[in-house]
Every structure is written in structure tokens, then in C-alpha cells.
Image 1 (cartoon, rainbow over the protein chains, first blue to last red):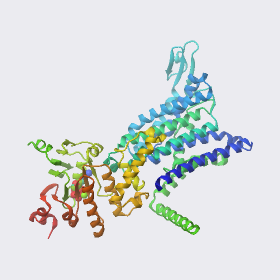
Image 2 (tube, rainbow over the protein chains, first blue to last red):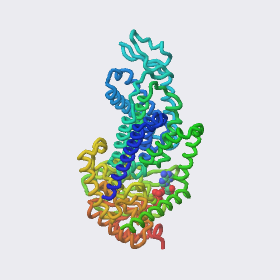
Image 3 (spheres, chains in turn purple, green):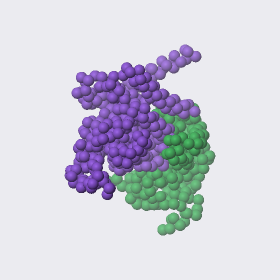
Image 4 (cartoon, rainbow over the protein chains, first blue to last red):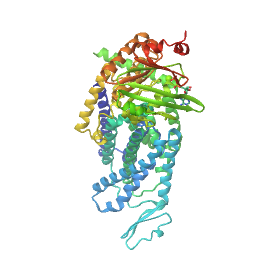
Length: 355
Length: 262
Ligand SMILES: Nc1ncnc2c1ncn2[C@@H]1O[C@H](COP(=O)(O)OP(=O)(O)O)[C@@H](O)[C@H]1O
Ligand SMILES: [Mg+2]
């Protein structure tokens, strides 16, 4: 079926693009031409790509808005980091990372499920507000938590490190706003790219599955979807939980790229959530490949154009507004359709001439 | 009153009793009764605003009735959610077309095969043999249904790219894919030219005969109604004006006065 080969081609070019990106960066790195600035961006590029793919499940595939995706990333990051400095500390580093990723995904998925409950009931603006609040709350709560461990087990308080009352040999894991220190820093570009591939594998296969079809059908027309027996709550939840789990994976990768993990407005605040949303919107809502490209460009560009970095959020706001107009204002849509049509006509003509 | 007892044994597929709903002060549907036999092609007619679409919304659980009962094939489905009602055997089309407009035509039908062709999420993501087998069977079934509506040639088009008449057909195809006992068609010929309407009549008859289903349709096109419906109910201001064999109903003086005009 033509349809099928089209889907296959799309998945294939997406994988190929990421592979090409990986190879180019590796060669660039190995030949020693890469600046240290660029080198430092390699792992961030990976978690941004994963975040873009993750949010695209909610925004593009499921058609809902989430403004709190950094919150899920935060949950994954802290889950992974806690594991890294406790049970994982004695493990071989790749085993530690592997288990941390599984745990981070699982705990974020649980949070996704909990936040998903209002998702099923709320629409549009309300949902945006709930997710936005979630992201902020998670970040702020983590900033007040003190977590320690001793022979008796885990201790937790919101007062200060002393109130943990740790016994002899006890160890503080989370020190309030100071976060978690002594992380292994065992993430690298190759692992990051593998995680990008895994995320893509999950999402692209989801889109072409029975479940993905149900999610997209519900997005396109909720009432019609119910009329053919599709459970709106089940499939909206499925999309949200998978998305949260992947954002958690990005968080684990983030945490394993640092020596110290703190929850600050910069890394897990709404600016981060908005930035991920910009990747998705700029790349084309529902367009996985596009959001990957947007993530890469929007990560590298501000670093290269340092003088712009002060205006980063301003530029994002303008980009968001411009894209929304471009995508939904009737005149812009008509213009775009004419453009696409004229291009496809030209392509067809060329194809015919070649034949 | 022992309506349910009387009908469970019989040939009655749909038994609606004293159905009613109000919106604010307006009684949109009031004391509505309807019995449809298995395999029947039944018409629901009446002027605009009479409450026809509201009855479809009540039958499919979009609205919960204030009064009355709906029995489908012996089972009480009153007040059940839309999804459960579809699983129980009612599928519908919409007066204002509601397709999955960004999905390919074939996926609109495959989405409707969802509850009949199953595999878990893990199979979908890891593409197990079960995934490939089930998807292949779904493709074949979907194409078979699309062929009936002469949509197999446009299976890969986005649903929104189809012209209006073919979108209406795709909606019927999608509803049929859920293998309903009762198919509800809300103004299927709306916006079609006489040629298309004639083809649609043939298709509706074909569907009834070949998909082992019963059809209740709302329609304003009297040619279509008198051409294919065996029985009619005329609705006026939310109440039944006349019910019976198509010929009798259409020649009833009251019906002519209230609806068909001079
Ligand atoms: N959700 C609703 N809220 C308020 N009024 C409604 C609603 N649905 C239908 N109505 C009213 O019920 C009446 C019947 O509408 P409808 O069933 O669509 O008529 P028909 O399909 O016969 O043209 C109309 O007066 C309509 O305005
Ligand atoms: Mg109507």
C-alpha cells in the first residue's frame, strides 16, 4: 500500500537524519576541530531532541497543550540522580545509567498519569494552566526537600539538613535548593544519541500502530471517535504517560551530564517548557523530524550568536506568535496551501519530464 | 405496561419508549416511541428543528434522556456512554460531517476497526508478528469496505481532500466498519446532486443487504425516502406526528399539511 511505504519512508528519513547528525558530530569531534563550546552542547542537543519528540506526542499526536514538560524532565532528573548517588553508586557506570533511565521513565510516567487525570477533564486554556502550574510546583517543592539515607533507611524533611536526624554514617542526598552533588557525569554523546533513537523508535512506531491511530482520530474529532467506540480517556492518557516517560528519560540524561543537579527556574522552569514548545511549533506540530531539526538549530544558534542570548525568550515569543499566525490565520493558511500546491505541481511536472 | 417483555422475544431490534429531553424550557423530544425490526430500512423525517438529530444523539448516548428507555436487541442501553453504545451495536453518521480529517481515508476506516482487530501497545511499538498480521488483516478489511463505497482508489488521500459527496460516503464506511446492528444516517444525501443521491440510494440498500444491518435514516430528500424506506416516522415539534408504512405516511393528510406542504 502506498500509504504504508510513505510512513516507512518518513520514519526512515528521520532515523537517517539523526544518524547523519551523529556521524558528522563524531567525525568533527574526532578530528579535533570541534570547539569546546560545541562539544559541551552535544549531550544537551540529545536531551533537547528527546524533549521535542516527547512533547510532540502530546501537542502533535494527541492535540493537547502542555506547558509543564520541564516538570516531567525535572522528575526524571531527580529520580535518576537519587539512584546514581545511592544504590547506583557502586554499580558499573553503564548499568547504573541503564537502571537510572528505566527508573526516571517510570517515575515520570507515574507523574504523567497523575497530571493526566485533569488532562482528561480539561480542555484548551485550562489544561495549559494546570500543566504550567505542575511544572512550577515540582520545581519549587524539590527546592525545599531534604532527603537523607542512613542504616535505618530514607529520611525526608522540608526544614533543613539537620532535621533529617541522620544516624551514624548517614548521607544527605538532596540538600534543599543546593540539590544533589557528586553525580557520576557518565552521560556522553553516544548514549544520548542512542536514547534519541529509542525515543524515535517508540514514537514513530506508536504513530503507525492501532493505538496511535486511535490517539490521532480522537485529536481530529472527539465526538466521531467516541461514536466508533474509541475511549477518549484511555488514549489521551496513553499519549500523556508515554510523553511524560520520555521527558523523564531526557531528565535522567540531563542529570548524568552534570556534577551537581539543582532545580532552578532556568533548567526546569516554564522558560524551559516554553522552549520545548517552540521546538515543536517551529518544527511543525506533529512533525517529528521537523521538531528535531528545530531543537538542534535553536540550541546551537543562541550559543553561536551570544549577543542574542539576552533576547532568547523574546525571540521565542515572536517565533511562537509568528508560527501560530502562519499555521492558523486563514489568509496565511491559504497562502501556504497555494505555496505547497505550486511546489508539488512543479515536482510532478519535473518527475513527468524525467520519465 | 410490559413493553420489554413483549419485545425481547420478537424480531424487534430497537425499542424506544417514551423518550424525552428538554433544553432549558424547550422540549426538544417528547414522549417519543419507536420500534424497528431487524433488517428494516426505516426513515425519520420532519421539518428542521423537529428534533431528529436530537433523537440520534439520545440513541447514541451523546445526550442522556430525561425520560424513557432505549432497548437494543433486548439490552437496555439507556444513559450508557457513547462508546458502550457503539460496542452494543449502534453506529452513526453526522449531519455536519465529522471525519478524522488529517488521517488518510483508509485510516478513518481502520480506526473504526479498532475494537474488532486487537493487539497491545507493546506489540505495536515492537512490531511483533501479531502487529504485522493484524495490520494486514485490517488493511484488507478496510479496503473491502472502501470498495463498496468506491473509495478504494482514494484510500491514501487525506480525508479532508475528498469532495463533499465522498466524505459523506466515507462516514458511512467508517460507521459500517464497527459492524453495527443498527446504523443511523443523519441526512446522508444532504448537499448531493440527484445523480449522487441516486447512487447513494443504491449504496444504502447494498449496505443493508450485505452487511447484515438495520438502518434508521434522517432525510429531507423525499425521492430517497420513498425510494428506499420501508417505514417512516414523521416528527414535528419533538413529537411523533405519524408512524407507519412509507406509502401510508406520505399520503396522510396531516403529514402533508405539516411537513410536505402543498
Ligand atoms: N445541545 C442543545 N442545546 C440546546 N438546544 C438544542 C440542543 N440540541 C438541539 N437543540 C434544539 O432542539 C431542537 C431540535 O434540534 P435538532 O434535533 O437538531 O432538529 P432536526 O435535526 O430535526 O433539524 C432545536 O430547537 C434545537 O435548537
Ligand atoms: Mg438535524
